[in-house]
Length: 467
Image (cartoon, rainbow, N blue to C red; front, side, top):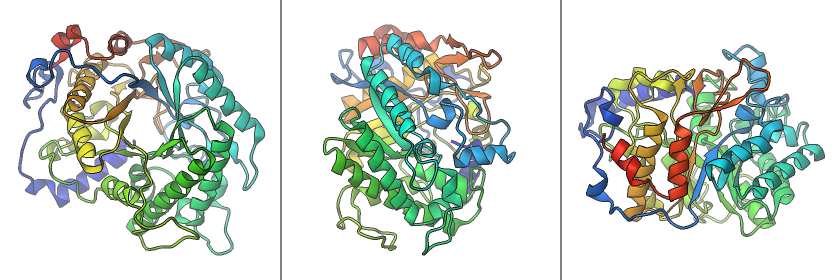
């Protein structure tokens, strides 16, 4: 998620809406108050019986992304963006997950995790128009097999902010628009999705087609801080339309190859800290999911053979949650290590999706950034963040939310779209050393306790919840 976009997006919200909001403080903004004054979350005994546990088979995992963790990506739009000098740093070798995936899977297994979200890189698999690289497919077969060998359920993202650079220059006979501005990119994406599904058939159950489409459209086509760096609301709307079509066509392609696959798309969930019942102005996530929940080409731009109107094209709901905002903390969200921590916002988000769509729910990203590993000014630690947020997941499950998994961002530090300064890892990486050693953080022990208990242990409740 781009910090520049977040600031811009929330500033727009303030100008459009927040001044008129009814100020209903959303509880739970600090661990031990953390310098904030909002009400604490309910105590552990007030809302959830002590014997409540997560469902059997609940997916405890971590989330990663190809460009951010693999390294050595030479053919994507993001690589071109970096080499053009549009970022503070380039990804380079990133976390070298491309070569170290086995060792990183071992780290995940050591925590006790049973799930691992990763992405396959379209630019590796189709480096030239129509050319499928068999070595790239074989690499990802090995990656998935290695995850399975460690009893890690792989969740595969097909498009995590990156696509082949040739999409920006390759012109269809009937279109001159680049990338996702071209409706035929949806068809190319579906063909790629089919190739991946065929290669991984029988070994992958969960797919995410397009990561945070609402974020991608805003940062790339309105804020202009991600490639392709445009500032045009009309183009942004076109891209959202094409993302929706790309998802639907990929959804159908995957199911044709593997009828048992579970396919979704994860959105970035914004929530008001001052009035969580109020819809975020211009909330593209809600519109996007509503469109896919009952597909009827609401954007009125037919493309080839589209599915029947009113057909659900989501097998489960997937979303990313990091913070809740209010109009007077806009400056804090400009940097990831300043994002306001509001654990109860995760509970509210879960209940919102449960009541709106009545589908299984997967939390596909949730994490806390520090600035180069330094203590945060608000007092939050990753240990407290994990305990408080997972307790809110527990609370939502107790109240009927069908939550099937929680994926923490991330296993290791990684490249955060322009910089290595934001640190999200359960394992910190020492980037000054050639072997990129993984150094365990204190949060590791907390997550291990939760996973082993399949619940938030009472000792962690007493230490962190409502404090």
